[in-house]
Length: 184
Image (cartoon, rainbow, N blue to C red):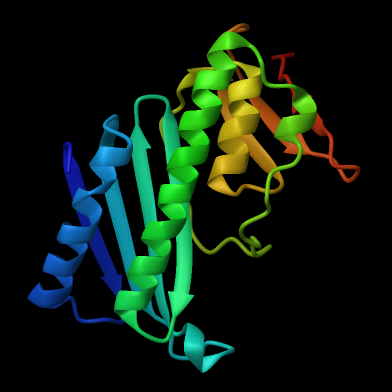
């Protein structure tokens, strides 16, 4: 992989066989997108899953120059969860690359951005806190990143046009709203 690959496990033993399997599979992501700086793989075993076929969870997060892509999949086997999450992230990479090229020419209508798939349900409880780097971007790029990450409610970004941190949110009617904070 480009720079860094981190593997984190929870309630699961990470054998050398699984580590080799991940390294072999993740290495090919560089062919799809060579701007990846950091890859994080989270593997977990959920003992009290609602369905026994969804006990193994694989999540992948890719960070690069100006983007963050994330996908999560569940399965009854750790290897199939890894395979499924890698297929999902490859689709996201293709979608990101296609949008990136369209956006530079200014040819993406807003109606096309609104038709994104909802990939995950977020739980309303705070189960962890995250810190992340903000990359300067415009409003259209923020909408793309929000949809690529699977964030259904809001997205925080640094607006390159106004040099202010903004909050992009999805309204009930499917349109987007933008909060532009001002210090009082």
